Amino acid sequence: MIVGLHHVAIIVTDLAAARRFYCEVLGGREMAAHYRAARDSWKVDVQLPDGGQLELFTFPAAPPRASQPEAQGLRHLALRVTAMAPLLQRLAQFGIACEPLRVDEYTGARYTFCRDPDGLPIEFYETVM
Image (cartoon, one colour):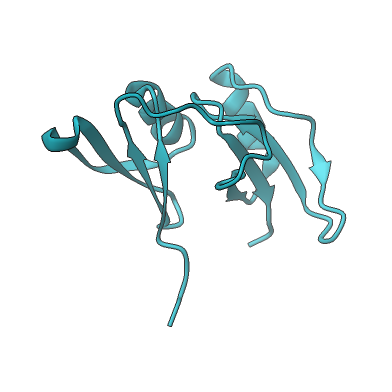
């Protein structure tokens, strides 16, 4: 029986930039890092504050995202936030620009997007806990 989402895997081009974004900027915690010599690849596990996880991978010569934002496959990563203003202030401190706030026409919740260091759309979706 499925009980929830365990992790999302992301292929990154610059591991240092991805670590900074997902750990330092967004508040994740690096749990483990493994170099896989047979693949010339890194795998870094990052735990989000709610316990969910991201896997950051590097692969030599990985192709870029085909189009923005409507490529097949992962469209965007949505992260739940409880207060939008402090998040936007934190992102601004790191020089990360977000799109103007929008309101979900079905739920009334506020949300916005920014881009990770590789251009992956990251949505921040405000929920009340």
